[in-house]
Amino acid sequence: MTGTAPQTLDTDRRHDADVHRLEVAHLDHDAYAVDIRGHHLQVDQPTEAGGTDTAPTPTELFAASLATCVAFYAGRYLQRHRLPRSGLRVRAEFTMATDRPARVTALRVVVVPPPDLPRQRRDALLAVASHCTVHNTLHQPPAVTVELEP
Image (cartoon, rainbow, N blue to C red; front, side):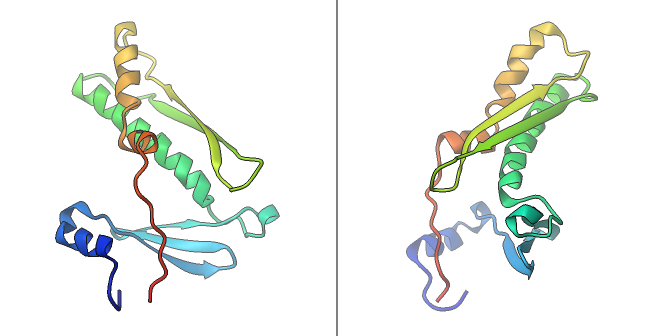
C-alpha cells in the first residue's frame, strides 16, 4: 500500500498476528481471482447476470462460508467426543432482498448429523455448530470500511 494509511490500518499492522489478509484481482468479464494464504479460488456471476458462470458468486461464497464454518464446528464436536464424522453434511440456502440495497435477507443452515449420532448428543452438536465464528460474526457484525487506495 502506498501513501499514508488510515489509522485503522496502522493499528492493524501493530497486531499483525490478528490481521488476516487476502487479495482479489480481476480476471475477465465478471470473474475475479481470490488469493488467500496461497490458496486460489474464483468468483463470477451467472450468465443471466452478465457473467460467464465459471465459479460461484461472492454471495454464494458468503453462504458457503457460513455453512462450512458450521460444518467445521460440528465436525470438531464429533471428533472431540470420539464420534464418527462420516455422513456429516451441512446444507444452506439463502434469500436475496427484492428491494434495495442488494443484500441477503435470510440464511438457513441445516446440519445433517452422521446417521449413528446418539440422540442425547444432538442438542449439544447443534449448540456447538450454531456458535461458529462466521455465525457469531453475523450476530455481532464487525466494523466494515471500504476505501480507495490513494
